[in-house]
Image 1 (tube, rainbow, N blue to C red):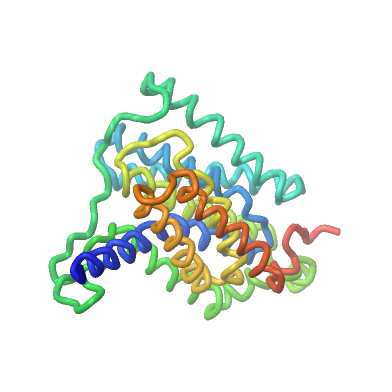
Image 2 (image 1 turned 120 degrees about the horizontal axis):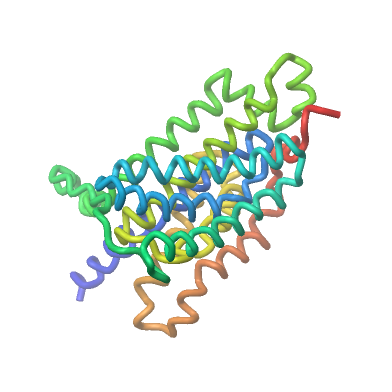
Length: 306
């Protein structure tokens, strides 16, 4: 009985980390966007684009790593739709972000049918495998959990560290945060406000694209229609929950990943509809009770031009 319980604990912890990866990547991308003063509501569409086009790239080029690059490129292109609408033409950020989500939701099933002649899912491709690094097993307690993770989990952790250093320990990160807090003042001291805003949007597309690719290439080795299932919106909540900080995004992603893991593991024990709703119920509770004191950067949605 004890062995079964230990195995269950390992299963929950391993699944928690796996489930947190796409949320972590998308939320960290959203942090760049928000710190540059651009709303990140387009994360769902960027993730969906990354999911589809990474599989398309792997199918077309025969390599999951090349597929990942293709997915990133197209996710950035979708992000730029949001960026150009908001930064260049001053469309309200929530509207331009939702436009990207709707665009990705419409284009991906259409291309699925045009390219593969299929509805619902794509053919299988070569995916990004789990790490399976042997020496992880020599690490007490957590070694077995780490050995079960996909390579993108470790890349995600590295991205979090580098992102935090950039934002809070470099002059360029300081300037980007200044743009996000007060674009008029940033422009007055000579900063290229639009360039920093576009940088934030591009980074959000890049990281959300990797998060989407993790879902398709890292977990299933295929694209399934609407496979992001609202994770981009959950990443928006995680970003606020983590106070627009990559380290906070890491903690928030693990928190939400835990409840996602719980619903997967206990799906055969409890009513499936109730269990599947768990991550979304938790999201609502966090919005209601945990985000009251959280404030977005003061310059979000504002422009340097008067």
